[in-house]
Amino acid sequence: MKSLSKVLLLTAFCVHSVSISFSQPQTQFGEGTGEYGQFFTSLKTQLINTEYRKTVHFGGKERKQFVQWIRDNVHVMKAMKYLEPDISSFWQFFMENQTREGLYYDYYYPMVARESHRMNLFDKRYWKIIARDTIQMHRLPVEADLEYLMVEGGHYIWQATGDTAYIRQWIGKLEKGLMYDMTDPLRWSKKYQLIKRGYTLDTWDFMQLPTTRADYVRQGHDVQTGIFDIDEKTPMGIMHGDNSGLYAACRQLAQLYAVLGNAAKASHWNEQADGIRKRTNELCWNGRFYAHFVPDDPTPSYLNMDQKNTLSLSNPYDINRGLPTESMAESIIQTYLSLKGKNVENSFAEWFGVYPPVEPSYADYLPGSYMNGGVNTIVGGELAKAAFQHGYETYGVDILNRMIQLNEKHGGKLPVSYKPDGTVDAGIPDNWGQAAVMSAMVEGLAGVVDKGALFGQVELTPRWLAAGKNDASVTIAYGPSGKSVSYVYHHNSKAKTIALSIKGDPKQYTVRQLLPAGKQVKGLTVDGKRMTATVEKVLTSQYVVVPTISGGDHRIELTYR
Image (cartoon, rainbow, N blue to C red):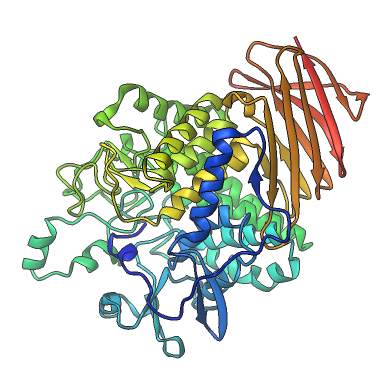
């Protein structure tokens, strides 16, 4: 998604540190959560204190930034919505600067940055100078992900604030962004009716060169034009991650339109989502996972890789965005498990950017470095969440345990990027990976999933049994609004009972309780009243599904045999 240079430049102007006030309920893993609670607290500290989290002053307003690249910022929002009072102002700056045709810029840099020469390389529609703030904004032309990510960011804001008036203000622009992707000839495949892009490494922002960078320069070319720029002659293909992102954005936009009372628009975008899902699954599935690229134009002869059988980082994202069927999701997870079992490349972890790596290099990135076969917690975090939610709970715990070890190894810091031998690599903001891992802990291990906004309709699926924990106290709260949901979980293995006490702001609870392996439910009570329990099977895991419960404080008890 970004080249190495982008994270080496720290903005040196218009910034100061910010602090968070905890006068409202705090997101935390409390008593009984043990090493997972300690790790969760460490992640919170790292996310709050990261060098990338700043206050900037643009457009006459104070903006709270998590990363100066908006895509990274949105990916970090999946955790910061639980921690930060302001998650919208930086996102809004990029919304305010959306172009007339609907595209968004990737990032801002000060005017003195070395990236200024990109304005001489790229078409005028891909850059902008904002003199008042002495900054430049660019879109790396090859990128095809920003429009769906801006919808994802807007959806996070709605969830954490419940502010429908705010969403109404911006929803037209969000729709315009998706329409740009689905109509611009450089973005939309007429052949496949899906998003296309130049042949990059998955969702990252650079293409392969026909030679080494040095030879490319000697031939009179500019490297950044070669790896970043596109035009009508650029060979392009269909990358599954762009289309899973578009699919999810269509669903999110439909939900937002429904909340705003526009049933026709909601229906339209749900129909768009259905079509994108069908076409992507038919075109990109290789029988085990989503193929890296499917050619829209012929693959360049100098790109030496098996596109059909290359596993790439968007596969776990695809699962969490809801693109694959259940059996397809399980197949993707099993593919990663198999890589771990084979210890491919003698790697300490199977969370590869792409596998196998491209030989002899990819735009001068050697095999095992950066996205070319490097290992990163972005993949690990998304994979853990997918594993928890699709019947591989033990694998999800295993990934988190290895994350804890990495955090301890590096003195209470979880780096995002590694070489297969475990050496820390560079090129990605650490808080992107930390946010993915925190999201896996919230929605996967703790099992708190907001189906709407402000936890109004919340699904609780505690999976502490998989982690060997018999007690757990959990509170998940939104930073902007303070709305929260809490539970206290207790498992008595001798009495064969599981109790869950719940409270908070939800108007409606859906509770799914993981049973010990090989056990059967014996009885269920809600607030002392007997209830009929149903059992849902996910792969080999069994979940007791409690009938929908209205808001308030409740105690659920089940017995098993």
